[in-house]
Structures are given as C-alpha cells and as structure tokens.
Figure 1: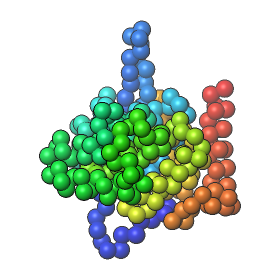
Figure 2: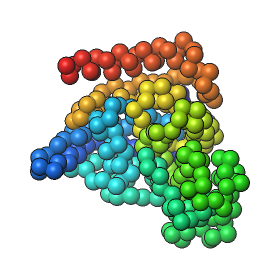
Figure 3: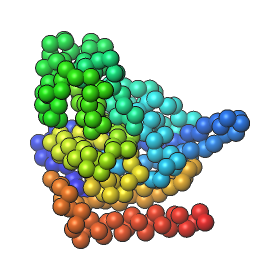
Figure 4: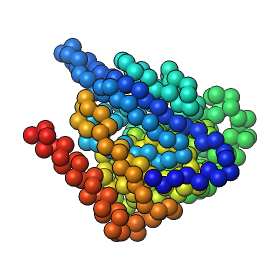
Length: 270
C-alpha cells in the first residue's frame, strides 16, 4: 500500500466501514433483484480507493449507499465511527451525468452549495470558487454557462463544485465516462494531482482497468451481482504518479494480476 505520510500526527478523516451490507431493487414485474449481498469492507482514509467491476455488478449502488442517497436493506455503513443515515456535508458525490445547472454561470454553479447551506458569505464563496477555477484552468470561463463548455471543462467545474464544500470524502461515480481518450487522460491527471496535494479520501468507481490502476492506492474488484468485493489489490506504484508509470514492469504485473482475476470470474459464469 502507498502509505499516506501522516508524520505530523494529524488525524485523517473519511474512514468508511461497511458491515454486512445488502441492497436490492424491484424490477418492473415486481420481482426482487439482489444487487449487493452481505458486503463487508473498509476504505481507509487518506487513500485513493478505487472500486472496479463490470457494468451491473453493483459498484454504483455501493457509491450511492456510501453517499447516503440510498438506504441499505440490511447492514450498516459508518464514517469515522458515525452511522450513515442519509446524505451529509462530509461526503460529496460527482455523478456520471452533469450536475451543473444550465441557467447558472460556472461561478454561480460552484458557489451554490455553500450558499444554500449558509456555510460561507457570498464574497468568501466567490473568492474560494475563483481559486478553485484558477487551479482547474477555468478562471477565464467563470462567467460562461455550462452549454459554452466542453465535456472536460464541465467535469472540472463539477469537481470544483464539490471541493468548495470541503468534504472529508470525495465519491466519484465513473466521472470521466464518455469522454474522448485525450480528455479522459487529462482529467485523470488533474484529479491525481489534486489527490496527491490534498490526500482527500476518495472512493472512485470505474469499469476501466487502466484507469483504476493508474489512479488507485488500493483497488477493490467487484464481482457480478449479488456477489461482493472479492479481491483487493495493493497498487504499490510510486507517487507522485504520471502516465509514464503505465510502461513500468510493476504496472504490467499489477495489470496481469487484475486481468487473471477478472478472467477467472468470467469463466466461473460460463
């Protein structure tokens, strides 16, 4: 594991503990479908934790449960010892779909959260928003509307929109899905640099193995529903990390380990 340097003794926040979690849904015919069953796992604070699995395996459902947007049928989720009973300001989620309001400027989108919660005066919120937009290369677009931005710019604005709330945990549900390869790689580097600067506890959901290995400190492989996380891979690649790491022998070894497990799981279903 890439241990987080905590030599100063500062307590890291965002320890997620999941115990015997279960969640299902009802289909259009009234049949019950189990998505997550008896899942127990911990995501440590200060790490970039990546959950990877095929579409339909329940990884997005897991993210929604941690965020508090869904309630479990059974089991529990605790964050820093407190049970999750709904959404909270300690967790912010970036969704697959855009969360920007098209009638608001980029700045107004970013400051909406702290203003609606009365967490910051408007002047302070704007100052903080502009600092984030500067960091993400969007300061020249602060007065533009979402429809005037590219897909990659929208994603960066949404991350700024989340970060301004100073969460303990960032939850990202396939945030770069559907973007072209070059934009996707750029945004991966943006988030990776952000994480390495802040050590903000992250739960990142993806179905892409290369993305998972490039980003993760620890990779959790999720099997077909209603199975659970059945392999944990310590991604001991050095930080700070750049795309050059994807050509190293260790990266290729880790990729082979993950692929062997994924192929084994596919064969069991045949």
